[in-house]
Image (cartoon, rainbow, N blue to C red; front, side, top):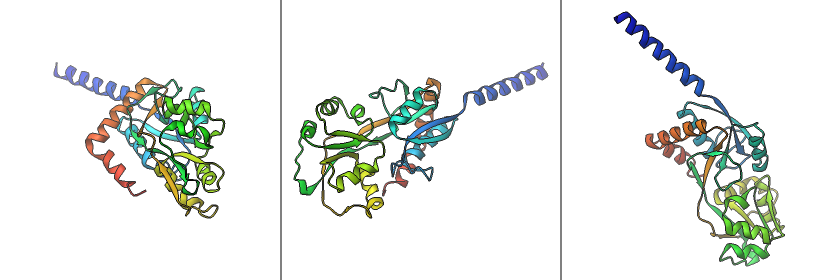
Length: 246
């Protein structure tokens, strides 16, 4: 009887291990290209990259990163070329299974101080030439989307560094950017434009929470479990602290 019980226990352990292995996977996750300090494309690191990788790992999955502009990542996910996409949310038209929010961006409007631009609300952007990040029209709310529809001089850039070049070169009146990303690009473009020009930061937006959009709901659930474990263990806070000065 004891021998039978031992055999049954062994079979149960084997089956559980087999099920666990079959559920876990290497997931193809899309990240926006070169968004310091969130994503350093050529270094496989960054605040956002590290958080997503750690949450996946805690949930039992591994990360295989892909880097591209947001619009291309959306097409790749819809065509089955990716398993998930970072930096998205339910306001997008992705039609994915969205994770709990794992990060917030603080988007702002930036203009050259020499232009004396005063902005009190989003609608004040109507008459300006504006450069933003791809899919900002979906992620920044209804008032922003309405402004986009009214403004023929509005554009969205596939590479976020382009916005900074356009602003400092005087090619646009204003750019919409996460404040940390905007600041991180200044040293990278200092040889091309005058980044010492005074700027004005217009704070029109609340923080934007972002999720990972998954093709599979079970993978989304594992990510959420891993993210909760990261927060509970203190590892989430440690990852954030590593990039606090960037």
